[in-house]
Image (cartoon, rainbow, N blue to C red; front, side, top):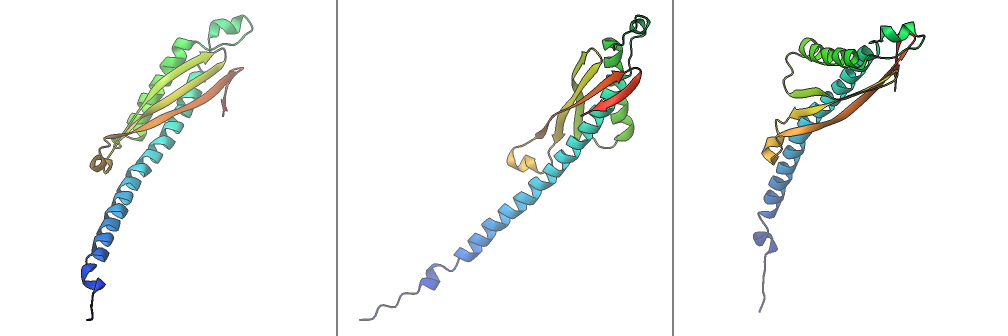
Amino acid sequence: MIFHCSLRKRQSGQTFAAFMLLMVMVVGAFMLSGDLSRVMIAMNKARDLADSAALAAAGAADARMFSNGTIAINPDLAELRARAVVSTWLAVRYPNEQFMNLSLSDFTVKGTDVYVTVSGNVDSVFGKFFGIDTWPIPGRTAHARLVYGINKELN
């Protein structure tokens, strides 16, 4: 008695199933990489925005302090200048890029030093298929110092 068993007939659909599973994973990876590239673009723009806002805020010297021989930054004027830079910068430089929502999230003045943090989020395009509506942009902090009336950027 000869038993002839064909493994090929029982496994004929495994290659197709494995291929389809692999294709779903590859397409998903491409979709997420598209969203992550938008996140990286927004992170770079947040850093640029923080640098610009910090430099503008550092230029808000308090004239009353100059008469005493010391220098200081007027915190109210500095924050006003930083917020103006943020709103103008986003409206003028990137009016058509509605996918990113950046804002001034933290502002601190310590003597002649200004610290500005910009954060926000990016709307997801393909991540919505995975249940991700927005991607957070971690805060990007810039530091600038007023030095005898000259703005100097510090890293």
